[in-house]
Image (cartoon, rainbow, N blue to C red):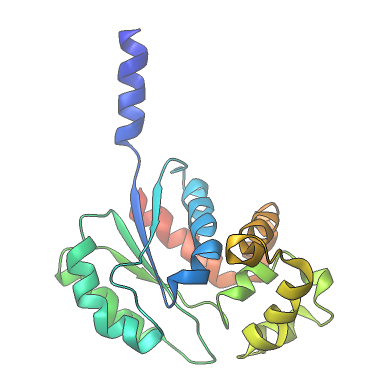
Length: 199
């Protein structure tokens, strides 16, 4: 019995804490929480604690960037911080490099990854046959949240559930995890970086 208890304690010691910084935690959390948990599991960290940042609550890319030093200082005791905003048709790489470097200077591990073009596309990747357009067109659309996701959610979501059913739809997407990584290569790269950070 003692050996069993010791083994369980050891397993808990191997768990990791991951903070997810979205542009808007209110609805994005229903997509990002299960997604990041699955990414961590793919890295052998299935017991990782995933927390969506709600305090301070950020709203939009620029606001999140401006608050990042304070966020990093408050949450640097976590093993990993993930900033997962929308790309919105922009190249965020220079900003991401600066944010990651500044976080490292504060003693934190921050990884930034932009959704192409918006977070909702990561959910839609599991429902391509229902979208009525090619996947390449979905990926290119900088207004995909309004033009594709909103009507999709209205038809296939559940207005009675918190998040309008985003949690269930994301669960369906994650059932074909490899397909998600193939349709959204930025997530395959993110998984690689998470694995390196949590090793």
